Length: 150
Image (tube, rainbow, N blue to C red; front, side, top):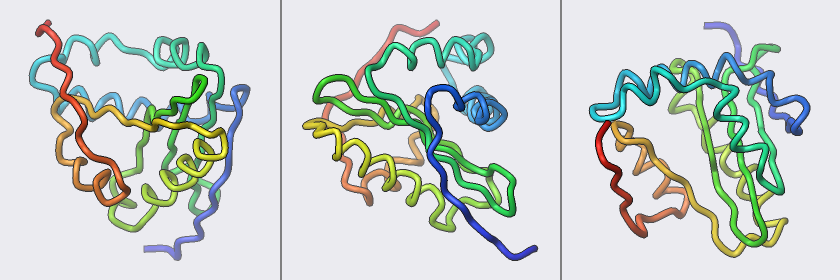
C-alpha cells in the first residue's frame, strides 16, 4: 500500500457536492445493511439528503484526502443551540486508522464553537455496529426512535 498522506479540509455549503460519490457509497452500504427500510435507501438521492441539510442554520462538511483523493467525510449541522453529526463515511480500506475519529473531532469542535448545548448523532437501522465508535467519542444512547416498517 502506498504511503498515506492524510489532509483534512472544511467545505462550506457551496462545495459540499464534492462528497457526493462518497455519500452514494454510504447510501449503498445502508441499503445493503437495512432489514426494514431498503426501499428508503433505494429511492434516496444525494439531492434529497442535501435539501434537508441546506435548511439548517449552520452546515459544514469535513473531508479527508489521501494523496489528493477524497476518502471520507463528515457533515455536521446546527440550529440555535442543537448540533448534529448528520453523515459520515470512510472508504472501507481506511477504517480503523483514526480517520473517522479525526473527522468527528473536527465536527465536534465546530459544534462546540457554535455553543451547541446538545449534540447528537442518529444511527441508521442495520448499522448498529458503529455504536462503540460513537461511545468512545462521548456519545450514549438517550432514546430509541422506532418507525413503522415500509
